Image 1: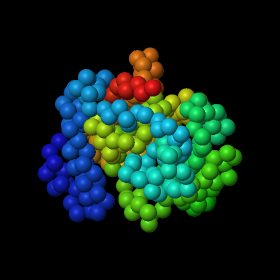
Image 2: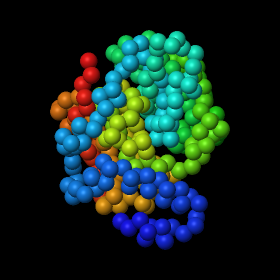
Image 3: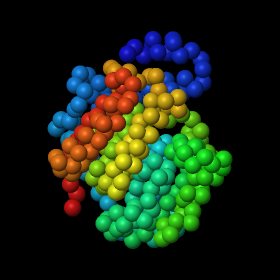
Image 4: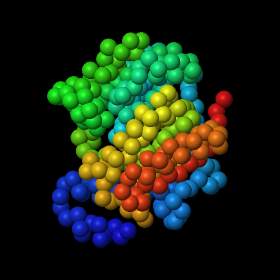
Length: 286
C-alpha cells in the first residue's frame, strides 16, 4: 500500500487525517512491517520475534492490586500509579484489561477467577467514550448517557473498589478514533502494562485467562475487532496486505492452539481477509 496514494485519496477531512496519522504509526512498527511480508494466513511468531519480548511484561508484581480496566488502547499510556493513588508504596497496580472493564461479566465468577492470582484487593475504573459501554446500552435498550452508564457499571460492585472515571479532560485522545492496529488476546493472565518490542502501543488488550464464559470471551474479541475495522477505528485502511492482527499468547502449546482456534473462529465472520491471527508462547515467570 502506497502511503502517498492514501494521503491523496483522504483529502483534508479531519477524521481521515487522524486515521492517516494512526496508520503512519502502525507502519512504523518493525514487527508489523515484518509480519506484513508474510503471505500465510496463520502464523506463529518465530524465535527472532520472541526474543524481543520483555519478560517483565509478563510478571505480576508482588502484592499487586488488580484493576479492572477497559481494553481501549487509548489507555495504554496511563501512569496507573499516578492516576489511581490511595495505596501503600510497596504495592503495585496490575491491570485486568476487559472491554468496558466489567461489561457483560458475571462479577461473582470474575472475582472467583481472580482469586487464583492472590490479589489482595480488586478495584475498577471506567472511562469516557467507551464503545463497549455504548454497545451494552444498545443491547439493554437503555437511554442513559454513555459516560454515566460507564460510571454506574463501575460503582456498587461488592468487594471491588471504584477508583473513579477517566474523562476527556484527563486523556483528550479518548474523544478521537481508535488507532488500534492489533489486539492482544492474553491467554497467560500475566500481561501487565510494561512495553516490549513485540507489540506496538496501538494495541487493544484483552485478558482472556480470566474469562469463565468462552462465548463471552469470543464475543468480546469480536467487539474489539469490529471497532478497529469500523468507522471509529482505522476501518477501510486495513487491507489483505496490511491486515488487523490478532496476537494470541499462552504459556503452553495446548492453550495457545485453543485460544488461536477461538480467535480464528471470529475471523470467519468478518469481510475479506482483513484479520490475521498470530500466536506466540509468552515467557513463563515464576
